[in-house]
Image (tube, helix red, strand yellow):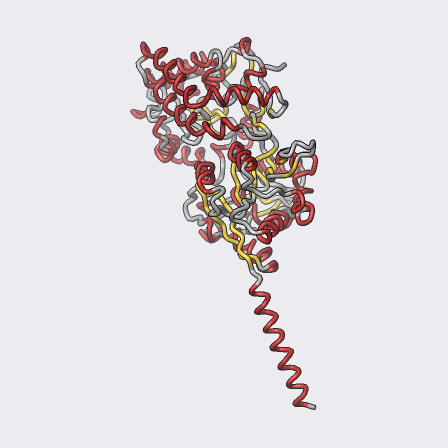
Length: 531
């Protein structure tokens, strides 16, 4: 009897071991793209958030998670090179809408309707079946019912443009904040003449971003557009080519003048972020334009570094780029949908596609999103409010490397920290900053939302943008460098020739197709010329 029992126990143990071995065999790998912003000490591919997700999602589901780092500012270019090759991550993220539309057209990504219904109910609830998910739908078979091709992230903060001026320089010059182009120019000239930043005084900074060369400069030149000569249809047709709109030329002529007077950052077209950051924090610049909360962000706090290097120095928000034809301070804001999340077909099995939706669904649960966005109490944040919102959030350089994190690049279904409601989100948004900067921060958000217009996108493929968009942007980079640095007496000739070069590489085709898409009702965004 004892021998029989021993045999049975041995068999049970062997069966148990065999079952474990078989279970181990059913593990799959899920590769997830994650943006890398070169935060010192933060290893995207081996970070705290990955370890948490592996323990709480991967291990229970027999899924080996891998984060695949991709540089943020070249992500569209990198994804464009691998999409459709079978070498993509199983979950890809991008802000390049044209790239996603092309992937839909080329049938390179999964249609997600059935997968979402079966495995993504929490994700559907977080995004909203009738609010955000439609941004990822396209009616490819033209049967009147759009299909779900990508998952749009939920953008919690739509403000995009912040303009900042040195409050201490204004005080030294006994000047009020500029309120229009003329008073802003007077400030730049006075700051230069007084050498307020020392021998390296640079009154105005902006950069040429290779991924979108006119991204920053449009914020200034849009103030010169004559909207009495621009229809809503024109606005959508020329959405990638503001340099061709009536009046924009005078905006570039103004920048050319500033450049030759030594008022503009002379290395603007070198795209040297490190040098620009150094100039900002060392106190050489008197103005810059970035996101509305950029000076006070805990992960890269320009204000604190400036104060440390130049006692008494500080940044303050300013609205001075008034468009005279509209009498408005134009600011572009993001649509409610953020980046696009896609699942490539060629690199992803059906089992991996299911795992991908399960992972996004798991990420959308409040307890998981909370940790992945906020980290560990006592390390990443030191306390919580009565509502449970983390406070005293520590900057990246204040925590050990193994606890460094970046919420937005890992929890990409939410572009912004989510605490369960709009009210709690707003409260949490302010708390992540040092309380002494709250008044400036609030004013910056108000300024960034003044006379705002929503950025333009299109449903469906814009073939001309897929075919010619990169070449157009390359020519726009050359255009910007040429028209700002050329001799003033050559400006008109250089400008016209540079615009003509942009047109010849495909801009005219893009403009025509954008116009057609607008007339077909496939345009999204707003026209600032409307009342």
